[in-house]
Image 1 (tube, helix red, strand yellow):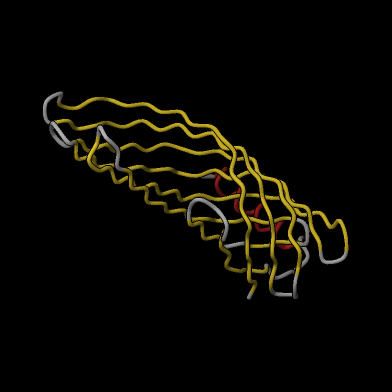
Image 2: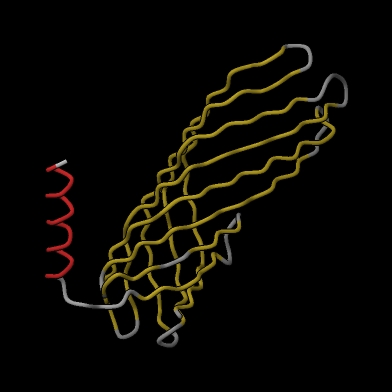
Length: 182
C-alpha cells in the first residue's frame, strides 16, 4: 500500500513540475497503402508523438485450387515517435508501432470441404518518415517501416479437424499520410 501511495505522489509531483502545455490531438489516414489505417496522433510536445492506430484490410482470392478465399486482417495498436525539424514546416519522424493483430479467413474449395482459419498475435514495426505542415492544422507525410508479425491460431477443416497454426511474417510497408490536428 505504501508503495502505491509513493508511486502516486511521485507521479503527481512530476506532473506539477512539468510546464503546462496542451497536447495537440488529430485524426489521420494512410492514403496510398495496401490497407486502410486510421491514426489518432497526439503530439504531447514539440518533439514527441503518441499515435494509437487501427488497420483493417480485406483480401479476396480465387484460383484453380480454391474456388474462393476471403481473409480479414485487423490490427489495433499504438506508436511512439520522435519529431525533429529539418526545414521550415518539415519534420523527420522516427519511432515504432506495436499492435495486436488478428486474422480470420474462410476458404471454399472447388473439391472438398470448406476451411475456417483464425489467428492472433502481435506486430512490431520500426518506422521512419517525413511530414510537411501544409497549414498549422494539416500535415502530409511519407513513411516507411519494416514490420515483424507473429501470430498463432487454428484452422478448422471438415476432414482433418482442428489444425494448430503459427505464422511469422516480415516485410516492408510504405504509406502517404494525411493528418489533421484539431
